[in-house]
Image (cartoon, rainbow over all chains, first blue to last red; front, side, top):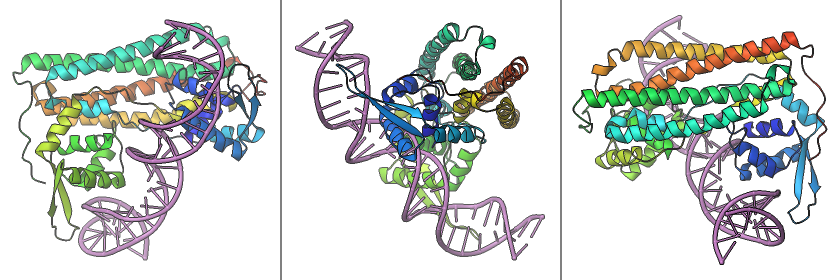
Length: 195
Length: 195
DNA sequence: ACCCACATGTAATGTGTTACATGATTTT
DNA sequence: AAAATCATGTAACACATTACATGTGGGT
């Protein structure tokens, strides 16, 4: 039920449509939750039947109607109860690290190229977060608790990207040094272990 | 098909049983991939029918038989082909950050307590990784490419935990300062936005 | 007596991804 | 003329979690 709660956390801030939520999950809150519109519409329907949110249909000119969802009294209380419960750390399932762990099976430049690509991706994300910090979170200590809470999650995003970039640098340097010191660029036979 | 490749990455290193793999996913490789035994057994069966791995049944005394799986020539090549393809960064879905983003709905000490709990969890994990670094990765620059590859993933685990701990400290300090400077410990009415 | 380690699986349920579907308006 | 934005959904499939199921041997 975690996506449902993530949706609630956005709706409690301000009533909005499934389409609006989709854009937020794809943008400003994308560094701690991802969801597609199909999932979002399904969960919105479920939350409505549970009575956590209500919908108001808004007719528009030249555009499709939109359904604006807002959190009910019950929904607000359910969200608060959920926040107060302990949470487990995120499960990590990182394909790049699976590949890195067996990167000795391919030539070093192949791995280095992929690490450089990720370095670039994380650098771009970091720049985006830095812009957000400048634009929306100036003088944060004098802002409302709502903004301060959101700021903490942005800080996590910033740190995560910085740290990832740092690891890419470290890994690239390490592999480059290994390449120059040892002669063999990799393959080798599978070790004939017994089970 | 990502779990299947993660399994392959462990089997290519040395032939082993589903039970052995389960323990590894729960331990030494847990910082980049998680899986339960139910999933692992299912994927092993699938990989065997695809011809990427073979099984050898080993009878044991006083214990259940075990099936020892090893990577075939085809499987090895498939793994290598997969490594060489580009990978997307991990999708992040972090419940703690959803909660943090709306933590203004609960009293500050509730949030601080949970952040301290996570600080502790990550500190424990970090200690474990540091032990592994000391025990298995001494003089890594003189070790085989197999060990060097694995070392890079451990370094990512270490950095991740250090960074997470740093964020917990920062967030706890921030919230503590906010608590002492402002009077209101939170609730407040929902903002009556229009959609 | 009870629980943990060893060792493998099935079944049901829940969650997430990919593909398909529609249709007007605005931008390139 | 083609593509993107707005706006909502259904359906099929893949993947993950939780519960259930079995049976021996060793430690507390």
